[in-house]
Image (cartoon, rainbow, N blue to C red; front, side, top):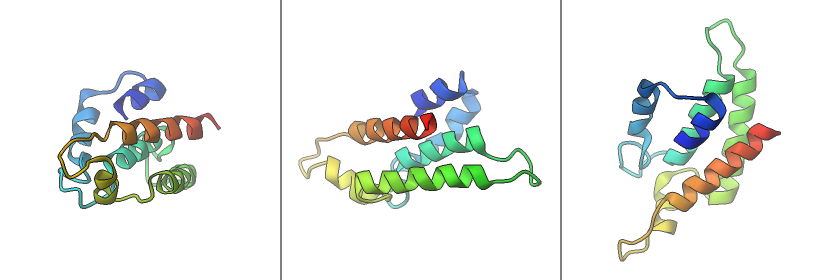
Length: 114
């Protein structure tokens, strides 16, 4: 998702990259929470459409985020890391989340292009 962020936002502040680190692997690698690819996409949406102060509307950010979440859930079968991780990592320990991230990034770019 960092590549998508840089594509749509330009060069990212290193602090933003560091801030996103704990979302990997669900949350802190636990595979217990939201998929990190979904979290990363939501952070990009927030950077593009989020409010800058409390008096700004959050409507556009929430609309785009809800659409992304719905598409992600439909494509991946879930939004939680654990079930998605299990689909892509057989018991023999092989596998990778790269296909999930690629698909999530593609969905995000398509949504942002609409």
